[in-house]
Length: 530
Image 1 (cartoon, rainbow, N blue to C red):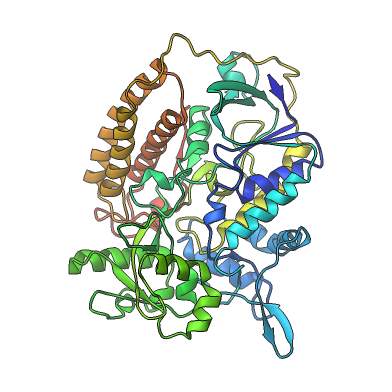
Image 2: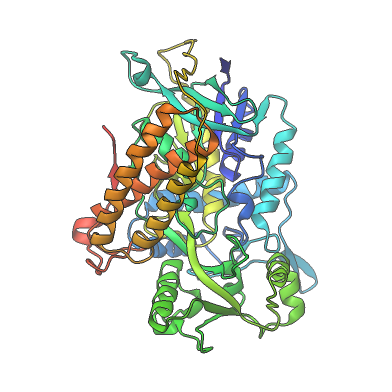
């Protein structure tokens, strides 16, 4: 058994920021199932929203966030994240991150971008690869910490709790079982303070902007441990994913629209204003539904994002990564509009926590996309996710340092018992079930929903979960099997949550209940196993 003062599962912005703060107070293990930089954070293009300009204000940022959240944001949480943001941004600068600047009247100032739903320019960025720069900066700083162990190619299997071990005390998290992918062995890691920072669940859908690691692991593990889960019906579909047969999950940043990009249909018409007066800069839920409706109405396969009216040198400098990637697929965004479609992007719900990241299980914290703190409500405002990850990591680490659970000291946790299992003999079963889950979620639980589609998805998912459960107990665990198990659990949580909400609000739009119902549904959808 290995033991640490803190265990962090996930190596994106929230996990690394938590680890760096916790490292000042004890030993830390950062567990990540691929390489350290294989995270959702590293794929974030647009930037990080934060009030840094005299033309902006905290009140405006709060108002924009609340409006995007469609009545479900926790205003106290929103105010805390928005007002504490500048200090956390300064800490990034102190460890070497340099945001883009521009020349104004003989002096240099931050080059702030604007995105959908924002009333002011407030998005700090590093060209169009902000997340990658943040990830690399945090990993470099983590490498300088002598008491932090980065366990790459290790996948968390399940949380270890007092209730599961039969202790007659208040339930609490005691550690985690972790699969070492190189050896194939499951290790036992003991800690009184565990932070889940595993990101989202985009891979539960057939089409997504997320990397392959986004399989909802943290939510699934927390659910199996009896932790409360909230608002999983609110899955954000990014309006503009590159539509190309050879491209995989490539996002066309909202910043392209922020800098003047116009969405056009297959006839070249600017169609968005038929759906919202704000046009291409309306919030993501509105734009994604508008594109979905336009594609279905016209029978076209995609719509087009046009920024050809901007100077070529501006496009190359502001969007070098997007420009080069499109060019690789034969699309010159200097001269032609980019074909785009909506794709699953961000999980607005997740593990329910308080304002300090504490969950309903003592000793367990959740930060970043995996958590639901009330920041995003029914729809996340663009570029608020990296801000939330930074601020909540700081708050959660401070809470964890000052609240070490007592009652069960120096308990030797039982080793993982594999039992009489065998190696997986037919991987095709795993791959088939994986594909079926993602396809049925796209067809039945997408941008537009109905109760009939949701019920069909629920029935099939229950059968799939039984198959997967049998597979799990009879075969040796592997990353593929664990991810499949987690995908099925999270898909079922999304469907169950969507069936509970008999209204349309933000990202949850159902043809059966097309209106928002504040009287009955202006509250979170909270699920609990017991």
